[in-house]
Amino acid sequence: MDLVELVYQVSREFPKEELYGLTNQVRRAVVSIPSNIAEGQSRQSTAEFKRFLSIAQGSRAEVETQIMIAQRLGYLKKEQTTSILNLSEEIKRMIYALTAKLN
Image 1 (cartoon, rainbow, N blue to C red):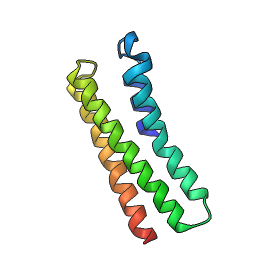
Image 2 (image 1 turned 180 degrees about the vertical axis):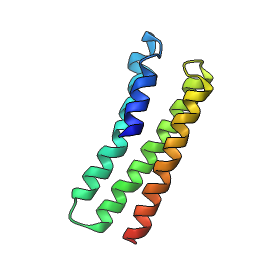
Image 3 (image 1 turned 90 degrees about the vertical axis):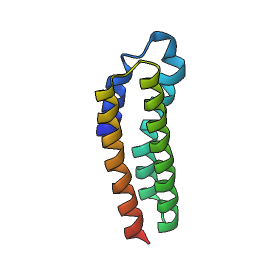
Image 4 (image 1 turned 30 degrees about the horizontal axis):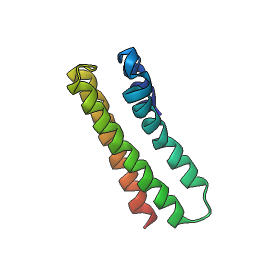
């Protein structure tokens, strides 16, 4: 949820012409992370939960890529990008640890 808030905060500064492009795409991807974790947890099987955790990892990687693109296009400062990528790395480790516990 912290990552969602952070991405929404920084993406407010993206150019208006990106509203239906990169802004929308990165926001949808970041919301997908906790949404897939929640949906997977509510499923009736461990296998399904692990599948949704995998989807969440994919969305997390997508956010990282889109954030790096935003920085390269000059929409984000290096410090903003670093902050987001550090939090994403922490989430990556947490999801991998949860998946390992489920195995």
